[in-house]
Length: 84
Image (cartoon, rainbow, N blue to C red; front, side, top):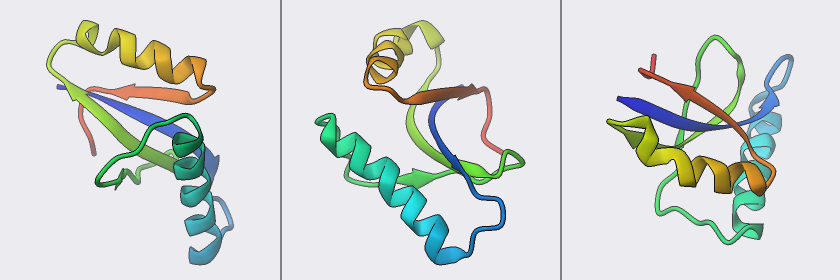
């Protein structure tokens, strides 16, 4: 399974309220680009950055158009084969 993540700012030395602001900034950017989800699934791992799950695919080719659209909207994308 491949997971498509949007990557935001670094969490280093940030308290909970600052981290929440960073997550909200990423959601605001999505909404400005006409994208809204019913649920937002945040991923925390060793990268220590804001990361939002925006898709899961058995075949990465199925995600190609979605990934290209997100990149055109100015998002940084990370693809992982399994979520920690």
